[in-house]
Length: 306
Ligand SMILES: NC(=O)c1ccc[n+]([C@@H]2O[C@H](COP(=O)([O-])OP(=O)(O)OC[C@H]3O[C@@H](n4cnc5c(N)ncnc54)[C@H](OP(=O)(O)O)[C@@H]3O)[C@@H](O)[C@H]2O)c1
Image (cartoon, rainbow, N blue to C red; front, side):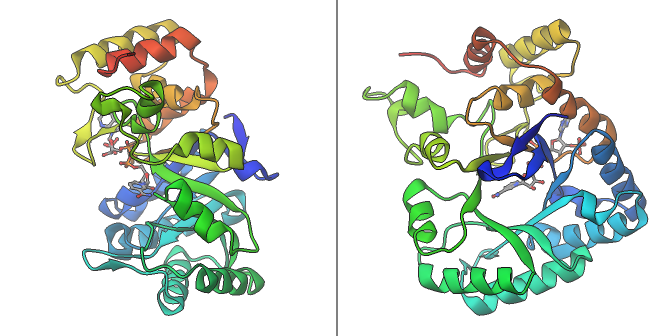
């Protein structure tokens, strides 16, 4: 498994990360199998969040990790907080501190490698966030910090108050969710694809040395379903199949390799709990698509050039 430097630090993390959102649906035995499969493929980075399965995903991960052959210190464990589902986003000291204590308990760990603010809170006070992060780092509870679903101005607003560099911004990106590149390709045109939804997030992150973590690499819409082997996407699947045959890997691998081919050096967070799909997806790190293949997949997903 190829590694990348998280946020341009000396933290070497696997290009493919294991997202544990869907782990609440698994028995502990199946969760052990998923964790061990991911680790055997070379994955050393795990993403979680306090809200996944209302805490059950972290709990299952923690219980399974203890029973597995994988040692806690061999993994980078990341979690996220700040979403109160359906009610608000909350960066207050009380909310974040309680959330982190709850996550560490469920995960069964005495430190988190990385903590992300899950979604931007319009009522955020950057100085308050800075004090919270200082306390979390000094107490040894959290080693590094980042954000998720932030636009560049929101990112800077927080970053400028912090004593730590934000290493990560976790955002949706896949062959079927390409807004971050569409508006650059259609720059200054009058069509809908020229609409800038996120404020040059890719260019900004590259310039700042921030690792973008791509969530939902195999989904279309917002969790509407999987595009792999989905008859609603015949052209895309035909192209995935063709390139899969050329490289001797799965369609999952080609779809993830498309994300990895971007020079922003993103990390891909897969969410499958199926051991075969985990192994298939990890093959992405073994191949490198050509420049034209990257464009051909972009077109097969329904995109064009002006
Ligand atoms: N920051 C955020 O706001 C945010 C939001 C969403 C997610 N995330 C993170 O990103 C991670 C990944 O998200 P995700 O789970 O949506 O990603 P995903 O990997 O795109 O989707 C996983 C789903 O796709 C299915 N799947 C994968 N390959 C398949 C195949 N070949 N055939 C059929 N089904 C297939 C999986 O089912 P099987 O298990 O059966 O393979 C699973 O239901 C999450 O775990 C979480 O850590 C972050």
